[in-house]
Length: 74
Image (cartoon, rainbow, N blue to C red):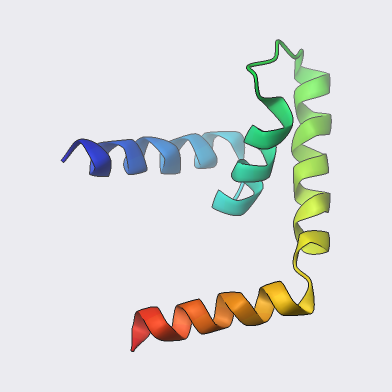
């Protein structure tokens, strides 16, 4: 039950930040340990997270994601 609540909290945080789950993961990597950012800096880091995500999806990574999704569905 605790795990489900934590997942819901993360989903809410992603919506609040205006980031997808994957963008939020990159955002967290860029801002850990907790950084004190003003709003302008925060927006820049969010933009960077959005820009980096497509670059992270190489053909191999995309194929791996499809295989995992297929295995999960079947």
